Image (tube, rainbow, N blue to C red; front, side, top):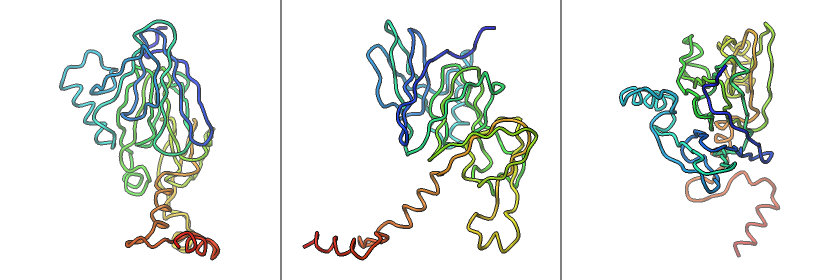
Amino acid sequence: MSRRCHEVDYKIVGHDMQLVEVELDPGETVIAEAGAMVYMEEGINFEAKMGDGSATGAGFFGKMMQAGKRVLSGESLFMTHFTHQGTGKKHVAFAAPYPGTIIPVDLSLTGGELLCQKDAFLCAALGTQLDIAFTRRLGAGFFGGEGFILEQLRGDGMVFIHAGGTVVEKELHNETLRVDTGCLVAFQPSIDYDIARAGNLKSMALGGEGLFLATLRGTGKVWLQSLPFSRMADRIIANAPASGGRQQGEGSVLGGLGRMIDGD
């Protein structure tokens, strides 16, 4: 059976702030989010294109529709296509904009489809179709950390998604899993996604876990992240210097004395 997507090899480099190095044979292409490239070797050319390149027969308006869906999901209008036009094997590397873990997923092993949070996609083999999927329930749309719109990745090749902190891969067998809404990264479409109230009113108000939890039911794989970017950003903002440059949240009294001495 012929594959629709290009077959690419890869290597994950690093631990806490990872990058993925993709190996391309002559004629192979990898698509990526704008600004994700770290380095590329001689012989690889790149071009910004509207859409993911999966719909080769689509006209201008078809590409506009595809690109418009990406804008709805919060992504950029254009994607960058990196093509090996030389000889031998060449490499191009990509990294995410914040610390975390890169998750390689072979779509041919997940039923040809994956649903993920809106900003999780990093890069993929040419032929992968990027689309949007709407949550089926109003509750999941209003109170889920992902909102109404999820990214839908379809194909039979490698895709690379990014998560904050440590990644946990869970495989459910007709089971139920409840997680913090912001910690959900991706899941197979065979998993039913909904939002449930986080315990009683006292637990919701004082528990510190948020008002709602994501409820995942069914059979399939789920990927979770330990540090959602929104949580990290909230902590940074909460501990940033107030207007006027006054420093806050630096810890001990000795640290304050040290800053006073440095300022003299």
